[in-house]
Image (cartoon, rainbow, N blue to C red; front, top):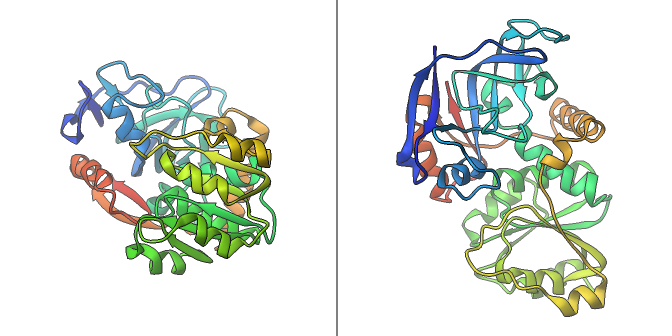
Length: 329
């Protein structure tokens, strides 16, 4: 028996329950871990509300990230042993492989031995954000040294990971945030430039920063009306990678700019990387090297104990955090 986080109906944080249920032993090719820390993302809140890309079968578990100790291994698994410190690459389905539990089971290919110096809380704040940012900026956009990259929702865990990755490869990160309240913290986190979109003209500021050539790469989590100034500031042949949709307003299609500049507007999910063994291996190597050399440092906004999972979700929905929310088990 182990405690797990589940919900029996869609809704706000209050629908979450901590329940004690029997956990089956790992099947062939699986690794079971005893969790020490869990990472909390907007995806979990979306599944809970019934608005995620995946549909939950109620009652449902949830959760995409965990770090802990290997408790048991299934038949055919090599390279792991009980007691190993590990963290989890986000599974394609959190309904099938829910991570937010004291004891959780995953396919062995999604289990990673993280650097010994990385604590469990930091390890639970690694894979969703760095895989998302790496896949978008390096794997898809081929961002290079000296290039400008616009990063919206920059104080989110993915935004901060994108800033660190851009700096590691020698690119120039332009952080976009709603107000100037987090501007100094974003500069301290590595942003070369910060734009407060509710206080400044986004297009004018981007043109001032990037000059007449514009910005080739935009990483956007928001959508909505900002598509107009973002695409207006892009370079010919540029690519806008959309991985979110935080704006409640409709997202216009900037036809004239897309045609006139031959722009690519591309949807992106981290599942692209997780499903492809070669791309996932390249991403793991980059991220583990970055963690080892200190270029990549997970920023934790706040930690909550497992018993306060409802409060953790409420904090997530307050939109005030800077970095990742972690739940300790």
